[in-house]
Image 1 (tube, rainbow, N blue to C red):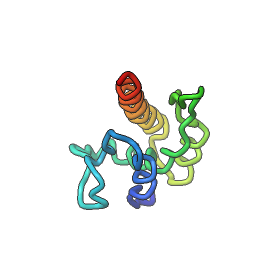
Image 2: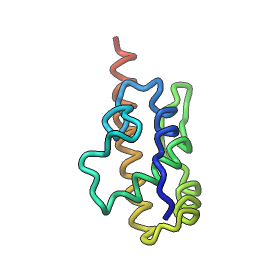
Image 3: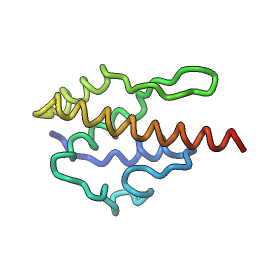
Length: 111
């Protein structure tokens, strides 16, 4: 699998968000996901590649899912060995981010 940091994609996604990215901030290579377990490396890498493939609905842009085809293509392109496990981890991480974003939006709009 080719390794390169997804910092630019992550920066763009989190630019206008109140919640911090999974690396803990915009440290751009200086910080790591803490703790970044070896078994999660591929999932975090793939998440960074497909983060901009989120599916939103409604006038308020409520996040509902991540494009599964985009995940599958990234898994193939970067030759991830355990595709099923990585696919599940990518979705779990994305849904966690979406849940935080939705909670932040609700809190903001109720003020």
